[in-house]
Length: 278
Image (tube, rainbow, N blue to C red; front, side, top):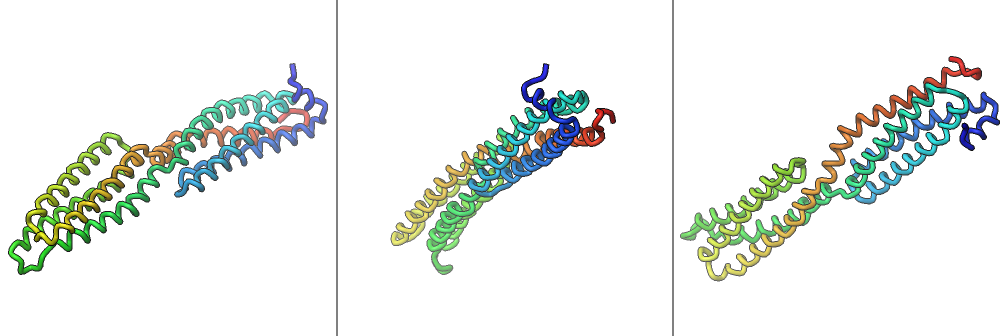
């Protein structure tokens, strides 16, 4: 028995229904491709606003695709196009799977946690590390001082450990593996202990007049580690890395399958004649 929509279709001339079916199938492919491209741009966007805008565009395109598919189905049934109906149903099953995955990807993409972590590393963490560098370098006495090399070695050790943490931040942000991130965090903790140990050793080595500079260096280190404590959980969330991996792997296969089915549907309808023969 025909649905009310299909019954309405049956009152239209067969040629009109065939032309409308061709239009809807062609539009399906265009809208699906548009939505897939918008979702990909959401994953690649480097700001929250851009990611959110592309995600909305992708969701709207998905709704349009579903609307076109819903409008096309009763027309195909009314025309008695069994093969085209089968292709549309096949697309529908694949599109449901595609859409569920796409929602997961877009939810991750708009979080932008890796990008936020990277921005913190490049800006706030870099500023604190640079302030630390200035603070420890001024502790080094002239080359003629009796303990010049001792203080210089301790200051450079402290600075090298801070730079090591910066390098580890970059690796952590790009790392998709939780176990590897854990090892990187352990190395960060080891480097931090190295910095603080060097500062403790500098305290009795420098002149009393330089005590305030030790305090300044410690404050810069504390600020740096506070930013690091913000970076690590953002990096752990890995929303950009995960959304990109899902897009490149699972979604790519679903997208190709959906597009192939839509092309087959479009081509099948193009071969139809008014009488329903090929």
